[in-house]
Amino acid sequence: MKTQRFSLPVCLVTVILFALFVRANAQTFIEIKTPMAPSEWALLERALLDKNERFVHYFADKYINPITGHLECVVRWGGADGPDDAMENFNKWSLLYALGAPKSTLDLFNFIWNGHIDQYTKAKHPITGEGMLYREFITSFDWEHTGEGMAAFLLLPLSDPEDWRTQERIVRFANFYTGRDSTSHNYDPENKIIRSAFNGSKGPMFEVTNEDWFGNNVEAVQTRQEIMKEFRNVKGDIPFNLCVTSLAANAYLMTGDEHYKNWVLEYAGAWRQRTIKNNGMIPSNVGINGIVGEHWDGKWYGGLFGWNFGELGGFNMIRRGMRIGFNNAYLLSGDPGFLEILRKQGDILLENRKKTDKGLMP
Image (cartoon, rainbow, N blue to C red; front, top):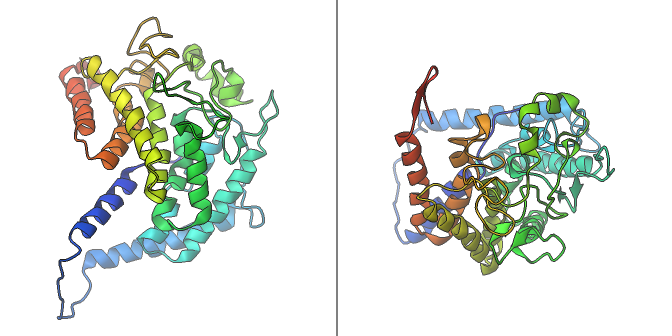
């Protein structure tokens, strides 16, 4: 049940920057006295919202259990039709109310989100028997998939920033990484790394199996046989983990607690320094001791989902964790250096394109 992938912080950045603009110009008043008919684009936007409202209720009536909020699907552990794919069916549903749809759409999404948490807390690992969610958060998984599954949740603060349950969850989840939760041990403040590509509410995993990735989905393993060895090399930090900054950025924006802002700037800042030191290209792995290439034969471009990781390398490195983390850092600090790092990646890739039988490739 794959759906189109969306980036986490785009709407967050847009709305916050607009709010800051309005606040900065709060003393400017424009008086409108002449009535006018609504523009065509406004009518089309309202029509689109109306269609989305009807769609979400139609979809929920067909695929959501009205008692439990569970998605009617085959519940699987891992990244192949696992919890991330289940929630990708509801990408942007949490935005509808913020954009002007009736509150019933927000209530419906919250019902489904709570049902999802219950459903995948009960989804058992084929070997350990534990649920895939613990304390309402993924036990330990990679942020390629965790981020996809949490995309709609991370936009909830735009719809209802005063909701106590969303606030509590955002803060609790952020604390798994910023050091305030003493049980998770995901972050190493000395080396400024997240200690594994697999991380979550039960902390980092340094050794993983095929079952940890795909549960009993044998077909998913077989189609990835050539890279399964690389999939199991999860020790140390990777740029995809920069997606975590969306949790801490949300926690700061909702609470005003400088702890979360400082953590985002510290963690993203460490990645920026590594990038500068590496001639402007972000390394795609950092070892458990803070050494680039430590677990990848000294290769700065190696790593899970790294620059040379098959079809998931190249430009995917920019549009995922790196872009998300540095944009969040820029949002909270106003430091244009974080954006310049991103521009540098694009420039270098374009300068080093190679012509293949498929055309110019990064």
